[in-house]
Length: 304
Image: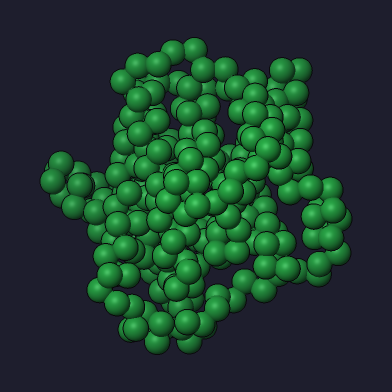
């Protein structure tokens, strides 16, 4: 039951991610990407803190040990700040196809980290599913160059994979909401320090009403992403949770097709099919049939 609930939560994460990617393509236009990232992260941290108080889970924060606080700070550093700065800097120097392919290899790196550090078992079925997912990703993006920008994006992706692995370890004792809050809170502090060091702090105060609206919209998507993902990651192995996230790409493509009139090529369509097949193989037919009968998951975090 716990893994099925985790799957449904991460499936919701993939849905949110697919819609968010589509929406953010409009939000970042004419925006300093570093400032935009900081504002989203800070707003989500405030939202998550409010949720923790609303759910009367504040006592769990007060009982966090120094070691756990350090782990949450590390999650914020390697997951909520450095990779975002690297990714968005490199994105201005390369094309979206190369960035998309490298970013979608996150599940592969996360699986390797989980295998060595969390002792997660990667069976033959997962290896077959991983090959389908990688092939589908290649058909979707078809990387055509590898230089410094691509290297930075790859480093960012590996850092996110490491953060997912560390988060899974921390989630043994803390709720998904608290881990998500730690990622956003400490991440926003590190990004703010970067903005101050590079003289970009002033850009936070110069925002149009339209930009403020986009920050709030994007923050709502990010809140839904981290809330469902970390609650799902608490119940699922890292390699399975990160693999499900690849379903976000077909969702983004369908939205682009429906609202922007973009055409999906035969190659891309086959890539989508391979990704869906890979996730389907990973969890199994019986898993999906049983999951479809569940009325809905409870996403209230467990008390510790």
